[in-house]
Image (cartoon, rainbow, N blue to C red; front, side):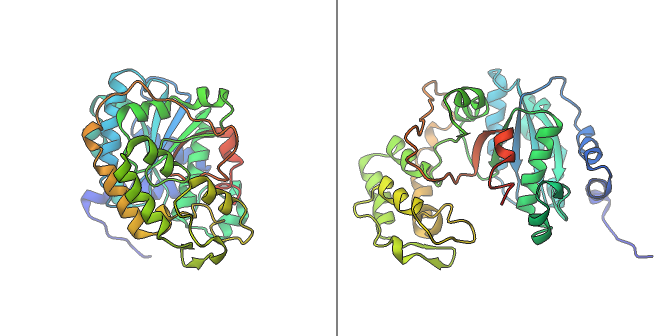
Amino acid sequence: TESIWCSWESLLQRLHIFAASTMDPVLDALKFEERFVGDGGYAANTGIFLLQFPQRPGWRVLARSLQDVWRVGTLSDSRLHVLVHDEQDLDLNRWRVELKDAYPALRGLHWCGGFNRFRSYNLDLVQKRPSDNYFNKAFTMLALAEHHSYEFIVSMDDDVLLPPSAMAYLINGGKPSQEMGCGVLSPLLNNGVPTVELWAEEFLNHEELTTLYKCFEGSSADYFGTSYPELEPMPRPWKALSWYERTGNLERKHWLGGKGLHPVRGNNTCMDVSLHLALRKLDHFTTWRHDHAVLVDSEQLFPYFCNNAYTIQRSFYSESSIIQS
């Protein structure tokens, strides 16, 4: 028989991975993973899911924001699930240290490496991409939401840095935004589509806004190695609605569906410009704001949504293109 060597320090993580990958039925694996944490003593209506990637330190900012949200009492109806695909990220002690008083909000660390455990959601997709960690996390997120009967899902990548009050508004915004007729609620991210212009016009001064839009104007319609000459020349001056009208009417399909076709996601220079402009606003990061509000796209001006932080109703998520690709 073959044997696998592992260090004593990594033994618990290896046992976690083995159990999560082999337990049947698979819901028993989810329960097993959550036994290390406990139920926190309260039920929840919203599941917060962090998609963690190896060697990214940004998750600590999320933990810091959740501390503040916990202290003001606006985290009482939510639980945190961390979805990982690297052995070293299966470390509860790190989360205990970083979350501090908010640690009871943590519901579990969940293994999403290897083969997708929830292939029944989309068997054809899983057969094509059986060990894709992104789809593994997306499917695990839905399985956990169904298991815990969460009405709303908050999904975040670990490189999204949200101030505490914005985090609280996003977490608790599922029901209010649903009552406004919204399918998805997103913060104004500096690299999201279509949020980048909304963010820029809310937070940047005239000079900063001009710098960002000049970069967009001077970009091209290349996206992940595919050229879209039918979208050029780029709008000059930059007009967001003009760009979204063009991309919304695009007939040629990209392997990613054309979603996110924007200089802020396809041009490295524009990404850097947007990031550095955002970093200038960090002085106000910990200020708790009371003027958050929802901008409703009632006219359906934006053809699609491409952000890595959002709140969505569970039933809507199960029908989304992420699951039904």
